Every structure is written in structure tokens, then in C-alpha cells.
Length: 431
Length: 157
Ligand SMILES: Cc1cc2nc3c(=O)[nH]c(=O)nc-3n(C[C@H](O)[C@H](O)[C@H](O)COP(=O)(O)O)c2cc1C
Ligand code: SF4
Ligand code: FES
Image (cartoon, rainbow over all chains, first blue to last red; front, top):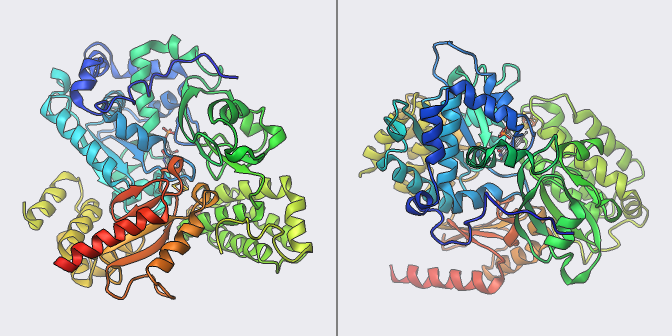
């Protein structure tokens, strides 16, 4: 079933000028920043976002207002806001499209958030591969400086803010917030042990808030449309609109702005048009490659943070990847394992070694050399990766391992019994 | 602006010198074509650190150009969404077209073919990053045309 919802975040995206300052100003741009800076105290801004119950769109779903309120008061240190535009969770492309089409909404969100936490400098960490998007964003930032929306006396107030656009250089792990800060300091992108959390000790050991692109864009729209608008969308615990990414074997892949709490099957069939070539669904990954997998008879699940958590999965980035009936699930999981092994930063033994062994075991099973014990060993390794590492990249592999093996156990077993992939010519990826 | 001026500007932006290391490496990559030993030593000088430290940072990141890389990179996304949309056969076709046998760079030093991890454009899978440009719904014909265009232009240089 399609729902009755009018897009807000993406409403101008069909206009080729939507990324330009003039276009943005004609459509009410920077009015909210100006209003917030002149009429509200920072604490009031934080309270407002707390009341909206906005939850971070970067993957973990933590309350944005709550996070902002963790910044210690009167510490005498500089405070930083860092926008996470490293977008690299497989299946995810929403932040890229937001930056291409509406960079000024991001800048306005950053102004509001920086003001709320008391930051005078903020950073946007954009992944290195996004060369075109870097240029668009860089242009937008220059435009805003020239027109007085950034720099000294933002919007004519006595608040000043600089934005530094910083390019990453190809490392998935730099999306993890503490790794991102290490990288921003010009080091290897190594995650750091938490606590201390960045809000207490972040960039240059100063209080720092890291927020995702979509989160900050949403902040701007909450101010523009009000808390009532925001909380009337979605579910009570997961309110607001969400950008869903659809990819894989779906007829109409792309970005869909819809309320949180959609039924997964409506996304796949009513919006995505169902499976390409009218094949059947074998599985759907609900929220990026680390989120788990659901079988065709489980697609009535509600896409919010709680419902997926109840299944031992995560909503993650709400990036839906559709796998058709011809996909070899051993091969798919091998592909996912290869990714996390490749991207492990290597600091923690369970992650570095565990992800490597899981990749090897899956390769062996897919190639027909698997033994009966392999599945047990693999699940053991996955279990031992959870909760024992500096960051949750290890969990990001353990979750799909658990769910792929549990849901497609017969297929994994068949590979071992028949010494190879029954579908070899269909298997798509690794070898 | 000269390269030195751009580096100074980058240094001015950040609260610490070391924070400018990634941007400085990008600027030096433009200057030297790849991140060579000379580039590393120069970056170390600008940021008051050691070449060993800079090398350690540089080698962590995949997006900088290594010295053994060709002039143009062809990166075929091989992660899950692209994988189920046929990136494997596309990769093989490009590999055959470039005649790469057991190597990743063509003998003339023009092209380097590599598998990439999710490029954040899965809605247009399979995706190829051709130098800085994303090519969505990529097929061998499009890639062949790009390769030939570059070959023609390079032969005129
Ligand atoms: C391995 C790993 C990769 C991550 N990658 C990203 C990313 O690319 N973009 C992002 O916004 N958050 C990413 N996150 C989540 C961040 O650590 C952080 O929670 C988020 O940026 C906070 O923003 P939010 O509160 O607005 O969601 C990643 C986390 C992990 C563990
Ligand atoms: S869990 Fe993995 S990626 Fe995270 S810090 Fe440890 S080794 Fe690095
Ligand atoms: S999986 Fe290829 S771009 Fe995301």
C-alpha cells in the first residue's frame, strides 16, 4: 500500500537549480537560521530538538537533542560540530543525493546545530570518492560566505561560524565517529575507545558533536515545519520522515522520502515496483549490509528502530537491498564478509582475525571445500566478535553472519554436502 | 595559486598543522601525479612530522594514487548491490579489453583497473569510478569508449 505523504526534504530535487543559493533563498532558505539566531537561546534550540524526538540518521538512531545536551558547559575549551558525510555503508546513497541537490539545507542545519552547542568552527568530513559532491558543497559554502550566512556575524547577528570542508581519502571505517575524528586530525582512521565520548573529549580533545548529513538537514526542516509536523509522521518512538535507499534487484531503485515505520514490503513492491524481471524475492537486507536479512515471508516488518531491534537486527541507514531468487546466499554473505574484512582497521584481534576467518570460511564453502563443522565454527567466531572490540565494525559483520546462516541454513548446508554451489553460474560476485 | 600557496592556505584553515595532512597530500598528488617518496617527505616538512609518520597515514587510505598506479583509474564497485547487478562480468570484460594478465596496470602506464568498495551510488549499480567521474548503470561499451577517447588524446600529447 502506498501512504499519504508529501515529501519535504526532497521536494525540490527535480529542479536543476535546487543546489543554488538563489533558488534556496526564493524558497525560504536561511530564514530558520536567522530566526533561531535572533530569537532563541542555545538551550531553547536543544530543547526544541529534544521535544521533536529526532533520532540520528547515521545508523545508530541516538536522540539528537540528547546528544547535543551532553556538551559540558563553561569548560573554556573550543567546541566543534562535525558533519559526517563519509557515507559508505553498502547500500546507502542518501547523503550523496542530499548534498548534490540541497547543500544549503545542510549548511543551514549546521548553523543551527553549531549555535545550539556553542561551536564557532564546524567541519564537514566528506568521503574522498565524492569529488563532484565536494565541488557542489564547496561552491555552496563559498556562496554562503559571500552572502553573509557564514563567517563573521552570521545572518547579521553577533554569532560567527566557519565551516571547513574536509575530504576523506577512502576508508569506510572513517565513518565511525571517533575514527572520523582521528582522520580529521590527520592520523590513520583508528576508532578510539569510548568513553570518553566525543561530546566530552572529541576533536583535539575538545567537546565535539558528530552528526550525519540527513540528521542535520532534518533539523532545518523541523524548525521550518514545526514539531507537530515532525511528530505526526512516523511512529511515536521513531518519528519523522526518512530517506530510504532502494537498490539491488528492484525494478525502481532510488531514493524514497517516506515516513519512518513503513512496511518493508510496501517499500519493495509499491514503491520499488517489485523484483526486476518479475522474479521472486529471496531475501531483503533492510538497513545497509550490516543490518541482517529478512526472508520473503517476513517483509511485513515495520521499518523503525524498535521493530528491527526486536529481530536482533538494526534499521541502520534504512538502505534496502533486494536479492532475487537466483542469488546464492553463501556468495552474498561472502561478499559482505569480504567488505568488512577489507575495511577492518586492524586494531582489535577479534575484528581483524575474525572477519578474515569468516571470509575464508565462506570462500571455502562457496568453492565446494567446506566441511560440516564450518558453519558451527563460523557462528562461534561471529559470536566472539560481538561486544569485544573498540568499535562496532565487528558487530556489523557478526549480525549478517548470524541472520544469513539462520535463515538460509539449508542452502549453506547444501553447499557443503554437494561440494559446491548448486547455482554456480548464477553466483555473481567474488571469484 | 601555486602549490605552495595552496598548502599554506590549507595549513591556515586548521587548528593544528597535522590536520592539514590529508588535504596537503591531495595537493601534492596534483603536483607530482602520485604520492611519491618526494611527496611524502615534502608533506612531512610542511606538517613538522616525520616521513615515516606521513607514510603510515598515507598508506591507511586507499584513495591516494600509489606510485605504481596508471594515469587513469578505473574502479569497479564490487560490493553487494553492484555485485548482484553484474559488476563481476563487467570487471572481467574490462580486464580482457585492457589485456591485463596478472597485472592491474596497462604496460603503457595509462590505466589501472581495480575493484572498489561501495561507492555510495548503489541506485545506479553497477557503478564504475572512472578517474573522478562516476559512471552509473555501467556497461562495457561506455567504458570502452572512454578508454579509446583517452588513448586518442594521449597519443596526441
Ligand atoms: C563502522 C561504522 C561506520 C559508520 N559509517 C557512518 C557513515 O558513513 N556516516 C554516518 O553518518 N555515520 C556512520 N556511522 C555512525 C557514526 O559513528 C555516528 O554514530 C553518526 O555519524 C552520528 O550521527 P547521528 O547521531 O546524526 O546519526 C558509522 C558507524 C560505524 C560503527
Ligand atoms: S572493531 Fe575492527 S574496525 Fe573497529 S577498532 Fe576494532 S579492529 Fe578497528
Ligand atoms: S554497492 Fe556499488 S555503489 Fe554501493
